[in-house]
Image (cartoon, rainbow, N blue to C red; front, side):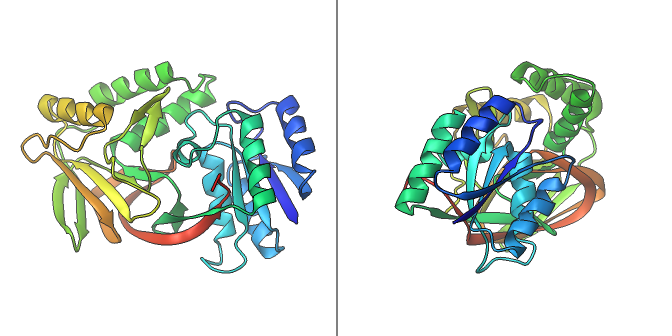
Length: 309
């Protein structure tokens, strides 16, 4: 069985020693090729190569960003036969996708799970989402969360480590000093209904939405790889609405709407998000170009991943 290990050498928990141990272990089960990502978008090229060359298994050592690139590369010809099986060794700061799948955060334990899956032939077929031309495995969003991610990426380029404290500082700065909390620009349309005059929208393909350290942040606790997409929108960024939203996310509860300022949809197959001005957007924790209109679709059982069962 042919395998490709894609390593992001800049991932938070990656080191040459860890990589060497993982390579030696994986070579016991796979005819393995190892590639290091060298620039943004390289993961896409490697995923595309794996699909085109008939690689059986692609293993990603990195965070949600490099996993997203690899998946988009593997699906460059769409869903169907020939898409490699995906394995994950978490190496990022949040690892939302891996944690949602129950993959151990410890690299050695994660590889042990992959080896068991290879020996036993166990895998799980999961649904994924699509935002315009970009696939996503965990989440996407427009508005404040994307602004926070873009600001954090700028800070990381200046040498700031991606820690929970750094994200907290960045979040508070963006909320109180930079985001537009007066002029809602977002509209969301689907067969489920219509949401207008929103400030932001989170789109979840799984639960939770993200993590603050070890604490799960979960605006849509029913979101699942086995259903469609979930949407959380805020029509106010005032004190009451923001407080209720924070309580919901931290308590992992669907209670509280702040007088209609918070709107959630569960298990949606298709919807569009438009904005009256270019608005920040993120996909799987990575900032992308600001958008004015994006079509979102859910694709069930589109990706096979290695799991315990």
